[in-house]
Image (cartoon, rainbow, N blue to C red):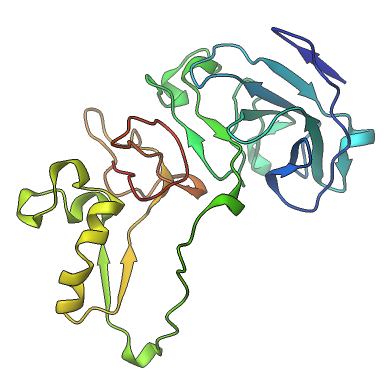
Length: 256
C-alpha cells in the first residue's frame, strides 16, 4: 500500500533483508529497518531537507514487507542523495520501554548520512512534535564510491602504539595551530597536523565523538561541544563544508 503527494508513484517491491539501512539496488533503493514491536511502518521520501511535506509516503504491508522483525521494501526510480525517514506505529508502554510516537520522523539507525535543516530544534521544544520542515532526515549514499586513496591498516603492534586523544573541532581551531582559517576545526585541518603529531612520537590518534550528535543537547544558551549525545552512529557529524554543501559523507571538510 502506498500514497503519494506531488506526483505519480510506483508501488514499492518487497525488497530484502540482505543489508540494514538504505542501499542501492539496480534502478532503485532497498530500505531495511529492524523493529520487533512495531505495528505499522511508513517510509517517507523528501525532495529537499526543508520540505514540510513528504513527496511520497509508502506504508509497508506486513504481508509483503516484513520478514521476522525486519521491515523492508525496494523503491524503484530513486537513488543516491534521496532524503527519507520513517514513521513507526506501535504501543506506548513506557513501563516496558516502548515509546512509539508516530508523529515523529525517525532517522534510519543504519543511515550513512544525515541532513539537518536550518532551524532544527529538539522535539521536546516543539509542541506539535511533527514539524517536518525542521526534522533531521536520512540520506541515501553509496559507500562504494568513497575513495580510500590507497589507505590501509598500519598493523602496528599494540606495544609500539602511542595514542593521542583529541577533539577534531577543537584541535586546530585556535590560530596558534597554524592551520588556515578555512580549515580550522576540520578533518582537513587535522590532516595538516600529522607531521606535528609524528614529531611528538604519536603513532595513533583516537578521536572524541565524530558521529552525528545533537549540538542542542545542552543547557539553555549552550552548545553540546563534546558530542556525547549520539543521533546516529554511522554518519560523521553533518559537515559545514568550505564549498557550502550542507550534507555529504566526505569527512575531509567537516567541522562543527
